[in-house]
Length: 86
Image (cartoon, rainbow, N blue to C red; front, top):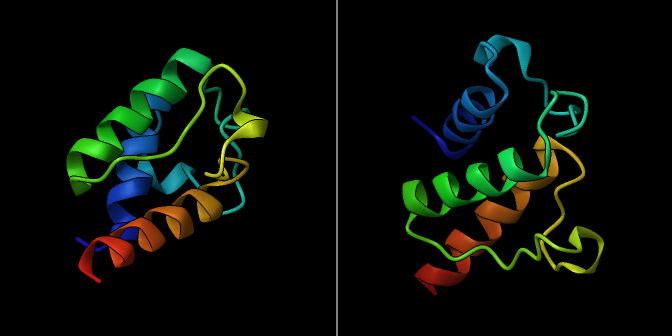
């Protein structure tokens, strides 16, 4: 399973949706994910990819990690994975 599919599966699980219901353009709010669900999703992503996401749960707009859409979350994770490798 690639990064995109894994992230979509994790986000779908938090939203209590099927992965097919999650689009790259979906925001956490679109999917019905509240702040607690978002934090849980971030923890699950960190565990799945063995990375540390620079995410400020108290003020997501101040974070270096863009959570505005599923596509941006995937891009951020791919960047963190690439940084780990180098």
